[in-house]
View 1 (cartoon, rainbow, N blue to C red):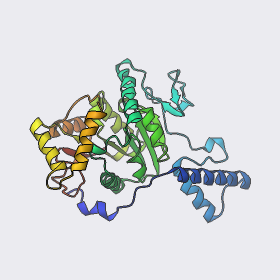
View 2 (cartoon, rainbow, N blue to C red; view 1 turned 90 degrees about the horizontal axis):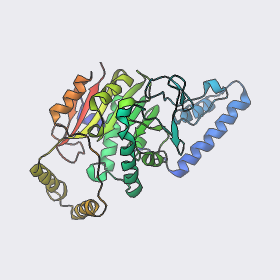
View 3 (spheres, rainbow, N blue to C red; view 1 turned 60 degrees about the vertical axis):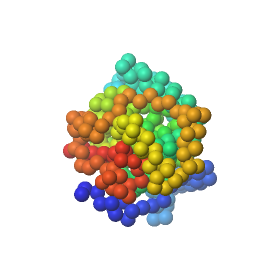
View 4 (tube, rainbow, N blue to C red; view 1 turned 120 degrees about the vertical axis):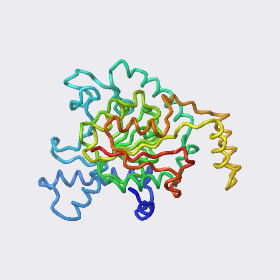
Length: 339
């Protein structure tokens, strides 16, 4: 078997949650280090100083003295893939907007105009709900499991597509983190939890250069791609050779299968009446309506990945990995690799 069940638990660590105090401490430490670089004129020459600078640099907080050495966001124009100067593409001559400091790097192609409207739908979701997807399996146990699985493959440059409020992103252990979502409201929440390169963008036109990322992950997002083939080929493009793509989907179920799943989830073998009534109240009082583009079966999801150029190394489910904290056998995690 490609992944040993024990490997995840052996490397388990607690997720990092960057609270307000932690963020303030990091910014204060960054300011001290910046001043040190400015004063010493030759860079740090002591081990302790070097360690301090190294610790802050992955968070994107450290700006060295020389502007040409400055840690830049990794974004490029989503359409022509040329570097941006500020938020302007010198090749396309297009100026991109920002919302509360978050770049809006959505493609200008007319076929993706619907992305902005979809983003507004999710802005409304995140304004009215916290932990919006917990009843779909995004429990603390799941977040810890998934973060450990990601670390099993890479702790390098990581991109999460559809990061939402950043609960999973904040648990990842990468040398550099990037995240996109269609909701600027979600990204405002996410940046309070973790330091990363955030932008509003679509997977069909990723604002990243090719062969730059070690791993891309998407949890419950593939069903929302406007063009799943185009999005999957874009993910292949930005990954380095040998890079991994971890994508989790909920495969389509019949009405009977859905009822049976809820019985297992809330009543048998472990009764959870309070959780069930919370689930019902959420569906009735403040329901979430998502603009899902398509539903998959196991075979159609795999076909999309393989036709886009990926090699599917493994498909993880509660059947193949009973200890995986998935809410049911309809949850599938595809482990794909760029050749």
